[in-house]
Every structure is written in C-alpha cells, then in structure tokens.
Image (cartoon, rainbow, N blue to C red; front, side, top):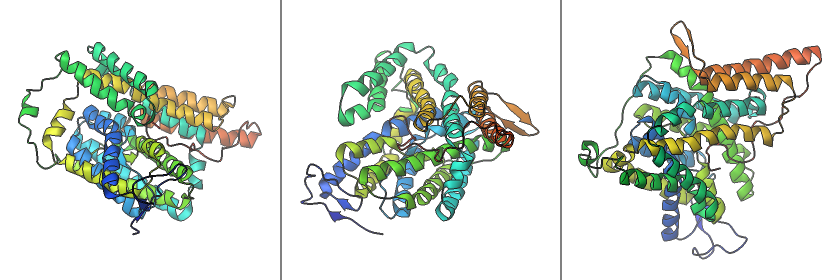
Length: 436
C-alpha cells in the first residue's frame, strides 16, 4: 500500500493547489486536520446510537475500524470516513431486540459485499438498470419519511428544546461560512443539549453516567436472528448504501480531478465488510460520510493520512465509557429536533435524485410506482406472511420495484412507454448524509 509524500513545504497549500490523497502536510498539521474530521463526523455518527439505544462506544469503535478497512481496501487512494448511516434507523426501530437489529445490520453488510464484488468484476451498469432514478429516489425518500412518527415521539413533550435545536441548525447553516456552517447539526445538538440541561431534562447525576469509567472497553453485544422477516426490511438499506458509496466516489473524483471509477466496487466491499463487523459487535451500520467531503472541499486537503488520524482519534474515544454514557443521555427534545431535520432531509435526498436526473412524473409508470411506494412507506403498511412480517420500508421498496419494472414492461410491449430508463441512478454529489 502506498504511503504519502510531503506536499510542498508541508506547511501551506498555495492558492489553486490541493493536497492529493497520497500526499500529506507536516504531521502536526495532519493530526490537527484529522481531529477536525472527527468533529465533522461526530454529530451524525453519535446521533444514531443516541436514537437507537446502541452503545456509542461500540459505534465509535467500528466506525474507526471501518475507516481503516476502507483506506486499506482502496490502497489509500480514496479519502473517506465511515460513520453511522441514517438509513438503518427505521429497520433498527422495527427490531424487537438489539441483537436482532445487529443481525439485520450484519445481513445488510453481507449483501453489500456481494453487490460490491459484482460491481468490481462486472461493472455497476446492472445496478442502474435495477434501480433507475425514479426507483432509487423513491426508496431513499420513503426511508426518511417513514421515520416521521419517531421524530414526533421524541419531540412531543419537549417542544422548547426541540424547537431550539431546529432553529439553531437552521440559523448556523446559513449564518456561518466554511466549516462551521457545515457542522450545523453538531452545533444544534450541542445547543439543544445545553438548553435541555438548563431546563432540567438531563440527570447528570444518574447512575449510568456517575458509575461509568473514564476508560474501559467498548460495550459490545452479539447479533441474533430470531425474526427472518426483519432481515427483509434491511434490504432497501443496501440500495441506499450503494447510492451513497457511488455518490461519494463521484464527489471525490470531481474534487480531485482523478478518474476513480475503478474504486466503486472496492468501496462497496469495504463498506460492506465494515457494516458486517459492526453487526457482529453491536455497532451501527456504516457509510461514507458527506460531512467529511464538506471539510475536504473547504480545506482542499484530500490526504488519506488525515483519515488515518481521524480513525485513530475515534478509536481512542471508543475506550471511554464515560463519553458513551453522556452521549446515551441525549435528551429526547434534542433527538426530536435533530430527527425532524435529518429524517426530512433523507426524504428530500430522494427528491433531489429525481430532480437531478430529470425524472418525468408525467409518465404513469413513474407516477404510479412512486405514489404507491411512498404512501406505503409513510403509512408503514405492514403485512405478515407466515412467520415473516414486512414493514413499510420493505413493502414500499417491493412496490416501487415491482410496479416500476412491471408497468414499464407492459408499456414497452404495448408501445405506450413515455420514458426510457435513465442511464444513472446516482446524482453527482454524495447522497449519503443530510449535510451533503
């Protein structure tokens, strides 16, 4: 695996220049930038275990390990941080136990490895045919909108804290330029946390926080597979992870001016292995992070050495149960406010896929398949077939795929087709996270 050469004098990046993935600045500067990336990812990555109840320390641990795997598999050519994916929130919420949720994460990771291997050896064209923009956008949208009741459940009864969190995120995102503006979610969580503390909504003297050691092993747990129907709910997440990873590769390629198409399959496999490991040990499923793409765009430092530092920093934090306990004490109002924004943004990412790919909603194939799938997802249509229970995300995804391809086949046969399948199902910017 290639290591890094020093960029220029190792101290400055001249106007018009950029630090390439296989370059680095001086180690003090590289360490500082790596810690900056930890700040960028922490708001979203730690919000997922706060919402789901997963151990924050295990999530940080597997986030760091996943980042190392991603860098190794891509031979240090593709900078990325692997943090918690919001796409997992709905199926995790449907799981009866934390072990079953981890089993679903493990299953999703294994599916992503298979897709990545196929993409590496056979190309990703078949993914575009299976999941054109009309279908991909619908699936991404329904995953976010399916979570609306969860946001209201946290918001209700803690309205002041929730509204303060929302307003802080909104104001910071437009008030500040550069990196701070891109960290609006993190700032909103911090401000909301402070407001909740002032309002007495946090018990810092609770036994969980008081008794937590400052240093110790992460809180691991093992997966279980008692509900086969739950695994089906994780399949749509795989489709989202595919879109997130392809979008990430395209974004980095656009920023660095390199052709990174040969990295797509490797990226999917790396994220799949990372997600599988998270499932084995009780961490949240991972994905490439748009928050960190924003930091790279602002600094023009694409050095993968920075991400090794970021992963190492996250790994150290994972060995502090005290930090994990404070994160797990995230006030409900903060979760409700942040969730209101984040879940809505996930839904709108689907709409962005439609817009950027000029999806034609005058075509009855597109209109009908999207309409039915969205309502099934938002309404959480749930059906039980034998011992398998399908929730709204699974039923909505199945509806989108079956209706779109079934109606398209009939329309082509009858000569009534209004819109051929689009050539790409992924926009040119990362779609993995709300701060893209």
